[in-house]
Length: 300
Ligand SMILES: Nc1ncnc2c1ncn2[C@@H]1O[C@H](COP(=O)(O)OP(=O)(O)OP(=O)(O)O)[C@@H](O)[C@H]1O
Image (cartoon, rainbow, N blue to C red; front, side, top):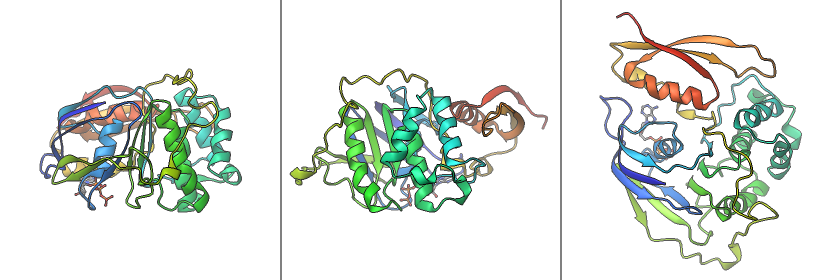
């Protein structure tokens, strides 16, 4: 995956978060994104995931299947954990049996009947991880994945990341807590003053920490029959940046939401959004499995 001359800011009146950033990630790479608070790590991760569109520059050769776990899982959704993961498996074309595998592995079995809004922070975070991993991603993006996790799952996560890498996936992780530092060959990219600089590779001093592929998940590098393009809907970037943009001319995007618990009921929403944000919002909604039917300019 190649990032070239990448520029991004949240609206024309805001400063650039990233300016002229570029780097290349190869199959199997695991990279940690570092940098002080507020420098743009989460922004970069959302750009890599395709949840945000570069203002200038390009991101090419993004793997088809992207799993993205946000820093804060948006738990205010009217589903049980099981219904939510079933829905996610369905829109990603994933075998629903994988839900049980991930539920067991992430220690979530007892959570499956719980409603998302009732989950603790750490439990909600696990659901975010599970939906990102369900689809066997070719690109796995984890924003502060260790935050709030119990000790067992923390210990499991480097192994899981190693398995994605071992089957040729790219893994990009922001990790303030440095939990991945023991991974051999860990790449490190620092975001600072809008640019991205690669730091020397992790020497992998902890030989005992080598992560190997586990049964079956890295047998032949194939990604089974999971092929839908797209991203997961866990974008905590839903903070309304359109308000920071020029709202002088709006555009109306109509979308038919399909995020109903288990019924085929459809709700039609009409959303007014700044023209400059319409394309990005439409592609985000499509990526989340919604049908975006028409876009028309609204009267001034
Ligand atoms: N939706 C948004 N609208 C406007 N500005 C935003 C939005 N999201 C982030 N920003 C701004 O962009 C800059 C980079 O934010 P980002 O969240 O990417 O930083 P970060 O490095 O991940 O921070 P942290 O380490 O605290 O998680 C910050 O100045 C932030 O205020």
